[in-house]
Structure formats: structure tokens, C-alpha cells
Length: 173
Image (spheres, helix red, strand yellow):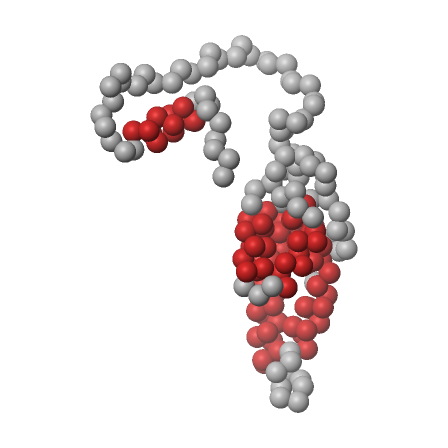
């Protein structure tokens, strides 16, 4: 359970966190906050104008440090310093930037640690496993007509075919 993983790493700001770890923690925190907000409404709120829910406030304080820690680890996973969290202090623009950073996929091994997905990357130095069966011959790309019809999508289709048969690397976006 990713929620419990984040709570176990209560104040661990080093290392990396996958997208699923970050977003499941965010989802469960949101659900728990909604439930506690409902319970606060049922049992009554405190404060001069009755706007402060005691259960929601206690939960928010309890997950404040784990929330910051998992965001820092998520930023590390995208090869950014945890200090990028401070950009969230800029209204709207900062929130959008942090959102974009949090949805980016895990990068290869970086200075913050190995890829948490455990996927091999081009920088991995482990010895390749011995094949148990003869390797299949690489699939050749389909032949393109010598003078293809003049359509705007033909160039994109040719790229897609080359990409799908692994002759061309994906574009760096």
C-alpha cells in the first residue's frame, strides 16, 4: 500500500518516489480529508465562527511532513532538487509547475538513487542475462511505396512504423 509506505518514510527526504506512490498517497489523503470534514460537520466545529474542524486539523498536521517528504522524493525521481517545492509558494503558476513535475515519468538512475521502478536503463552496468532460447530475428519495417501519396499524415505514419519496430528512438519532448 503506497499510503502506508509514505507514512513509514515519515520524514525521509532522500531517495525517490514513483508516480503511483505519490498519487495514491494524495488520493487517500484527499479521501480521508473529505471523510473527516464530514465528521467535523456532524460533531460540530470549533473556533469563534465555527469554521475549524478539529479532526481535519489534526489529520492535516499529522500528514504535513510526510506530504512534503513524498513531494521532495517525487521531485528527486524527475531529477530535480526537493527545493523546487518552494515554487508552490507562487500562486497558480507554482502549483501548475509542481503538478507537471509530479506527473512526469521516472527517469533513469540519477544522483538521488536508482530508478524506483527497477527498470534497466541505458546507464545500467549489470551483465545481461544469458538467453534461454534462440533470439528471434529482428522484424523488418514494412516496405514503403517508392512514391507515396502526397498526404500530410504519411510522414507521421512512416515515423510511427519505424518507431514501433524500434528503428527510431522516440522524440525527446
